[in-house]
Amino acid sequence: MACKKCKPIQIPLVKVQALFDPFCDNPWIEHRKAVTRAEIRRAITKGRFQGKPTVHTRTRNIERIAWLVVHGWRKGIEIDVGIPSYACSYEKLTDGWHRLAAAIYRKDDCIGVNITGSLDHAKTLFGIDCNQYDKG
Image 1: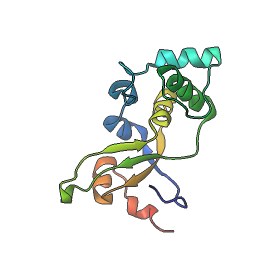
Image 2: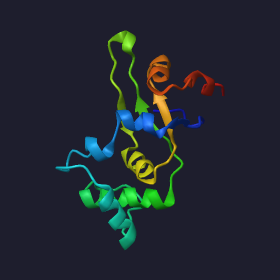
Image 3: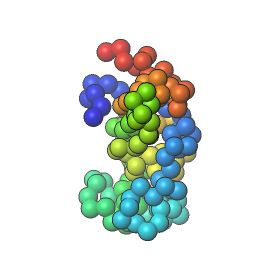
């Protein structure tokens, strides 16, 4: 879990999307296929929104993303970059798939991210020196 006092690091969205793309990866395993931009656009047009995360049905996930597109969010997404020196070199988005989908849909330049794992590996992945943000 990320430090509650720390602000999320702003990372270029294209770098995050290169690793995690909810429109291709389908992070909601209960769905047979990934949500689409057209489905989100229809939810926004019809005013169908899900303000708080609830049961993860396909419709509710689309409505949650639509709500975030319109209303935004403050909380950063959570990425565990692993620790390659300990043979633990995976990258995992542990929280924030709806927020990431909303940011991609809106074509944001950056997204706030809280990173756990090797900060050196995070620098390799994202080109950001996370140590500069670790100054209380």
